[in-house]
Image 1 (cartoon, rainbow, N blue to C red):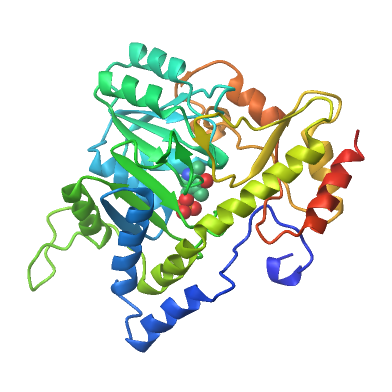
Image 2: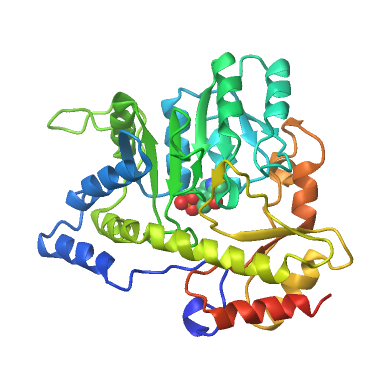
Length: 374
Ligand SMILES: *Cc1c(COP(=O)(O)O)cnc(C)c1O
């Protein structure tokens, strides 16, 4: 069943346009000036507005977060046979672009403290592969990785840090926005993210030359000449001016969305927090998450599948945590530095419905269904 056929379903995280209709206004402007394509004012402004919001100097708007990760790796000059350390517990879109660049991923375990890359395991990885070129760290579910430790280790080993902040737009680590610690930061506006353009991504960096280069590659690498002249491999990765209009409108309500996501998490925590063997995702004192999804782990007699199936019977969406990359058949032959932390999180974790359109009644329904399993 598609979302359109199923109005009463409660979703994990679905698109939520502003009540004020900001998105439509920006899209209308694009129509009025016939700036449907290519590029245009919405793209330029969306780049500026997003960069300003997170405190980065420059941004390149692209047609997906995956494309932004790909361009970050290319900008970092990751190429054939280079080693890239990549967080194992993540969505496959973090790791796939390493393969697009013919480089070699080495997967790194998470720790329980952050659910993200374990700095100690990263240190071990550098002992084994001292010349690793780049590190792809993820801020899962809107939680931040322990960036001070990760940055220190990467500086010591001269590796470029790329932050996959696809799920963490608006998350702060020690007051600074995720995506602005490493040389490159990546955001996604896919339909399930905290704000969405229907599909799209953004690459941010303080390096103006690299961002201009990414814009060049992403528009087919056309040299400045009247005819079509190409000295480099190009990609068709740019965001359209229509899509960027939706993004500008959504950015205006980002803080509202974060506040609601936090409310949802705290509602669950208040009503489910005392259940035996149930633990919510870790909120560290130095972390102000965007609470993209409310997640928990179980270690008692109730299993993740019990929750997922009983919610599903009530037409409510939930799902397991990401299955680690080193457990995926496609990536099985690559090295993995770690123990069983990411596997244990995967086997015991559940993402609860965290849709910002949920009412208190919806939240109570979810809570009551889960409580009835105890
Ligand atoms: C959504 C997501 C991406 C990919 O973004 P797209 O815009 O869908 O290409 C990458 N990494 C993580 C962790 C994601 O959740």
